[in-house]
Length: 229
Image (cartoon, rainbow, N blue to C red; front, side):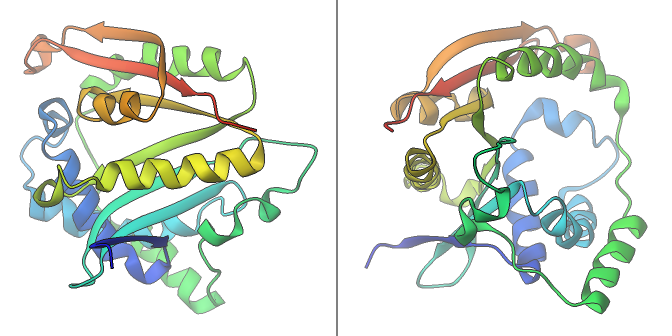
């Protein structure tokens, strides 16, 4: 049996996903800058309060997967996908296995209350770095209907074990079934993974983040994967 399995997410996965995701991004020196004065544990706690609502948001278009250690049951990776608008198929019929199951009204209300009560305030000075990235992503994604790889996070304790590749390849298989190519806005940490599985660089933007306390190079890479149809 392989050590890791790729499975769908549920609302109850919120705390485990928050720990995985925040720990992963805490290794990015530029990302850490937006959380000045806050610790990783604090951000994880607040993300845990928000995650159930995030999983229940836009369930018609979003698809979620987690990588699990089959021996311990620990969540060691996570990926979010966004389906394109399409007139040929209703979104609910596309990749149903990765859709988050619905919950009852009381659970949904609880998720919304916790989301609203969480402290998710960060230093918005760095937002200026993301403005050209958003503009470029919008321009590139207008060229065709893509399955968008929106979020990838592997816990730092489990990197180098093929988990990111497993997650991406599972999405490639689904994209092939749907007849879609894949688009991703990547940062340096994930660039190697995408290139290894056949993504091609469309464009890139490198910015100097030193005036915000960064190391001087904030790189964003726009890639696409042509899938067999």
